[in-house]
Image 1 (cartoon, rainbow, N blue to C red):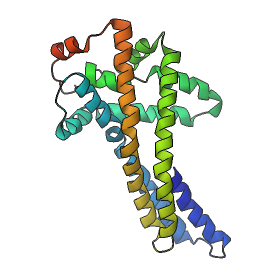
Image 2 (image 1 turned 90 degrees about the horizontal axis):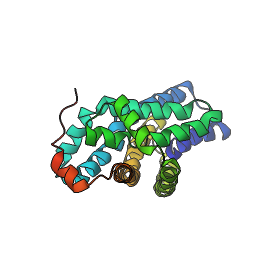
Image 3 (image 1 turned 180 degrees about the vertical axis):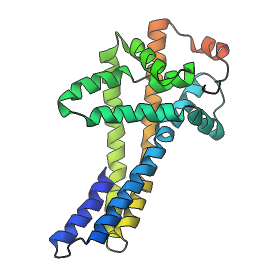
Length: 231
């Protein structure tokens, strides 16, 4: 994001001001970047799944607690991680296939809510989401498009302040420490703005079920028991 761009900009600035980056500086920068990416990867299921789980539980009329959110995500940790790695891989391979990835991503929009509400595995949740979106793809796409605009507007606004602070810190701290700080602040920013998008995804899931299956949330809340541990 902006923070990593700013950090590498600081390294490049050293080379253009007569202070070439030494191998030690580049090594610490790459090592810090690797640590930051690893931390981000480990917390991806919590960053994107915790709010979705809480929203699903609230929609079903169940009490939501911090411990319940953690245990709910842990039960589906590797499935959530696999889902987001697959989404990231799709958008990283082939710009020419970008329209196809958009189409697939919209069809898989309800994967996480299906996991939590219907206690399904990753593959079953993908198929279930695909069937729910069928016939409502454009409507779902435009809703997601508007929510993504709100998401990135808020994210860019918060990230701008962090970039300014990091540019000031480049004078007094090493690139390794700065990259570690960047990873932490990136996580904080995501924690503040991700709920907007994740709650919208849960609402889309229930809206699709209401429209396609005449779902009654009150009956569903009385019929569905507490989620069982994943097998």
